[in-house]
Length: 468
Image (cartoon, rainbow, N blue to C red):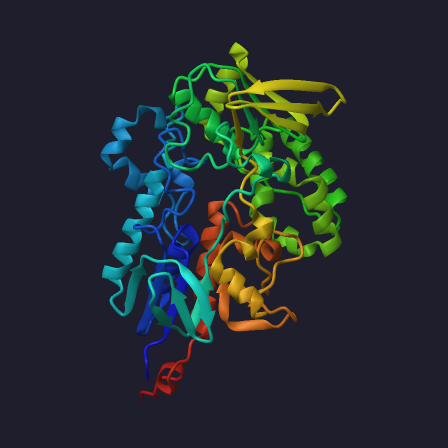
């Protein structure tokens, strides 16, 4: 019988974790090929950055693959020379927040170790992009094709989407549409006047990066609600047990969580502990809500949830606080209503949440509104190909790809594809909490089990002979 072949498209955290779990779990021969254009696996968008100001957003002790011993990455990092060289990574409470690229390197090592420790599974990385899926063949950008039994899509974060009002200025020298590009911030003058669209995690990264470049010019960050990502909790705090809540209503959940935060405060516990427990139960809560309630959450509460749930490292929070205290950073709840271009500068007009109008002359306008998840299925050739064939469809919330409870993709008519899976954040419309690393890690392990259960097995593998 021919060895089953699993093809994983995408070699960031989700795809690399899936490959490692397949190697660890498979008990019979298996081929696993990861198609990823980067030269190393595990990095993806988040962990491929070499920017020293970009740090993981939680302590290293909370970063590991599903099923690994608690603190696996933390122990690995403390054995690396970078741990002692990067003094900024260390916090007073003993926690470490390494530069993000270190976690990418850790994942690449885990992939290499899995290949050595589980020889029954042939792990392979092909450095290429996927172009199209034809039956059981995946066409690649290098002109080759792969024949596979299962295709797993680990495509999580599409490129940043440029707001419609900025499209006519896409080529203007003052506009920085993608601050993740290497070196794109290097030529900014230290006294440049800058505005940042968006006030979430990416904006925090940009402020921290500008700090390492000694920028001290006027800096304005604005978004519709003007909400900043909160800082992560320091110190050792007891866990919080969330009181039961059965009502499938977003409004009732909001009241319930506010009451839980107040109850925790009475016991001198911070709100972060309550939100951490909500995160742990996030997938169950999300799947208990009907679609109309999920849509209501996305429309009214998602931005508030994001800034409290997806928190930033203390080092990044300190950079933001310092700029605010010296008065060189303003955070504003406002929307862009007009933009005009000079030869080298941009002039923007904002309307604040309270109706006032502000005008700003800018040397640079930086876009940090985040990945264009609503356009994921049209963001690259493979997904376009699958959509055109009716094999996949976008989910109803605009988060990514529609899947069933087993992570199979759904066709345009709503039927599951037995040999086509989604792993990672692109499946979060179904599962809810699938952006934080612990949940993505658990999802990768679950998809690995689903894939192995779907593969053809010989009779002997299904039912070992009876031994008297």
